[in-house]
Length: 138
Image (cartoon, rainbow, N blue to C red):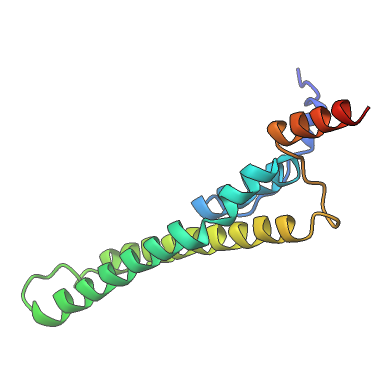
């Protein structure tokens, strides 16, 4: 006996290949319109802090890897094609995550700079201050 799938099961959204970068992008797409100003500010600083740090770490790791490969002919660590491919795929995935974090940071910054183009929720403290100002003016 076959059963009909639930409506939500039949309307699955395609997020692309399963990867950390696509996961980050999908989560951002779900929440970006529901963030407060202070939350957007936090995300807007990703490129200042996380992206720069991770790019530096990746740069150091790749440089060390290059030195290791260049100076150690007898280790055999990179003679197996699978090891090299796994390493390159891992590096590619790391770069993809860093790219998505940079994009999210830029998106958040754009939303902060152009609130007239987006729906940005004010912080609760901002709402309370506005309510207090209105009450005092009345």
